[in-house]
Structure formats: C-alpha cells, structure tokens
Image (cartoon, rainbow, N blue to C red):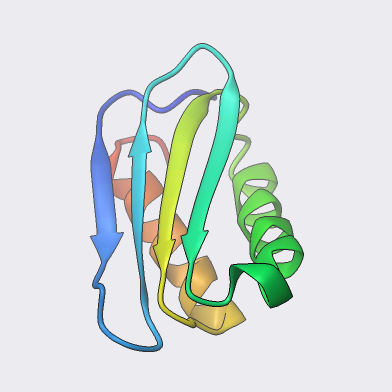
Length: 87
C-alpha cells in the first residue's frame, strides 16, 4: 500500500504532535521532537507499528512531536493515513 496524497493530522500544542504524510517511492520517517534524544527510538517504533498494521510500504512520514504519548502518536498517524485515502 502506498500513500496517494498529502495529508496531515494533529496540532503543535504541548503533549501533542503533527503528522504529515505524502507519496514517495520508498518508506521514510522523519522525526522532529522536543524529546528526541530520550525517546526517538520509541516514537519511531510506534510509528512503524502503525504503518505495518495498515500495510504501508511506501511514502514519506514527517512528525513534529511536542511530547505526545503512545496513544496520541497512534491516533494521529492513523488519522493522517485515513485522510490520505489509504487506510
């Protein structure tokens, strides 16, 4: 499954994140976070888990995180995917 069009979900408020998805030839995940040094590996793991669950194999995913918890990451990524027309 690939991402067909650009989409986004979330906010840039504290304890939330903004997710941007767009079409690309391969799967890439970029993370900008206020807690990147401590939690980038956990954020990336959660994003990849959601992408795998939806069968996404190609696309660009960009995250602007402000300290969101796992459930928020999952919800925002799923919403962005649905808005892109793929989930």
